[in-house]
Image (cartoon, rainbow, N blue to C red; front, side, top):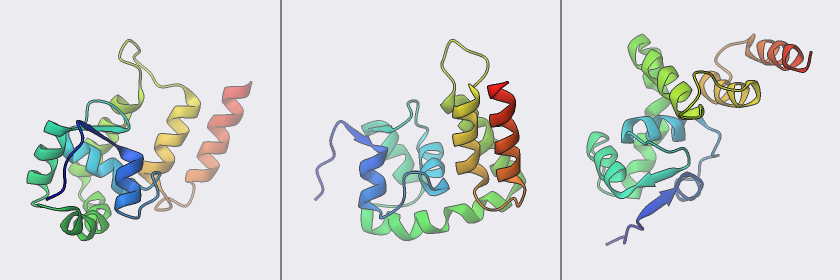
Length: 130
């Protein structure tokens, strides 16, 4: 049996699952686990998420995680993930996200599914520097 640490870093999970930390798969896992803090999965979040994903091991989680981006075709799921990403990225005492963080999070959420996303990121970056 795998011993679970009190909190599991998202970077460690990405290594265990052979994902890049900047892939949308890890963000979707964090969303489904109900993570409150970026980069950390608590024991309770892990158990909740594994139950939601119907996984009982890392070996079972990998193929499930590979299929998670398909859920982005569901408009409601995609909307909820965008909302989660926004709340996840902003500081608790702020109503907005700074531009570099927004660009980083949007690049994860949008990925290469939108052909003009990079142009939009350049626009945001240039406007931010003015």
